[in-house]
Image (cartoon, rainbow, N blue to C red; front, side, top):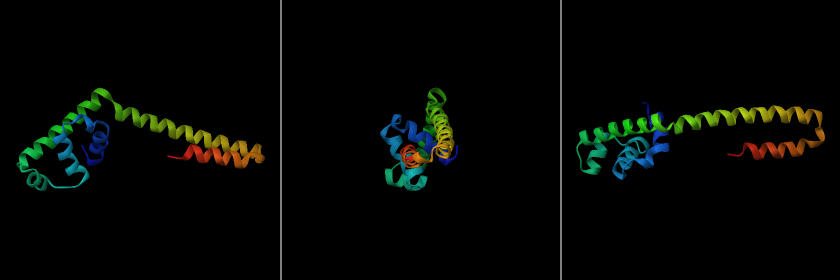
Length: 115
């Protein structure tokens, strides 16, 4: 599992990890500390940090396998993107046919494009 995949899973399911697991994974993946730096900071062995990271990765993958939250979010994102494209095409066609509504259509597009 690459770092981006892990962070995506961590964002979705990180709250289900224990406080210690959350802290260690945050230090490693978000703060870019090494296993050795985390071990020193936490007063534990490097092996304990490695085991924790490996266990967390597996646990997060299992959550996704069962719950599919990340998969669903990606599907929804693609659908929203497709709908935005459809609205944009409609807006262009509408403005061509009814140029008197250019301002109103532009305002609607701005509203739809806000994140």
